Length: 211
Image (cartoon, rainbow, N blue to C red; front, top):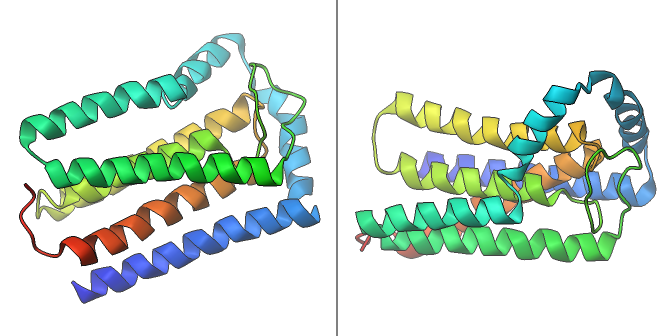
């Protein structure tokens, strides 16, 4: 148990470092922002009309409406399973991540790329879609991995959480609504927040029953 906690602390610090590095890069307009420009300028080579529709459909799954609908389903299942503590954990992660990325967007005030192929309002850094996809996916990972001792299932849950986070991040780049540093910052922010809540939640709840 102590090893797992140390590993979680390491991941938490690495995620915070990633987010801080992206924010600093944006603030100082450092070399990573040149990569932003290169990726944005060359992304149009990958765009195909039918793929545009598919990618937009995927990214909409983590829009406000998509995330709200998904969360309603998740909470309904948790109520049915009587996983009441897990509902609170999921809600703290979800609402906390929303407040974080919205507040930071307002502070940083970074403009979006000009090459977007869909409408997107608000500021750019960090990517809200990526932040929420990461926070929500790994919240479910932490919840579900405690329901089984099967290591193969743990690995599958981790791959699914990471895969979904990266998939949503890639859709934001493909659609041209975010810079590369935006999605990296969003991934770091979402992972930092969910691991931080998990660390304090585990210490607070200890071995208390889930109900």
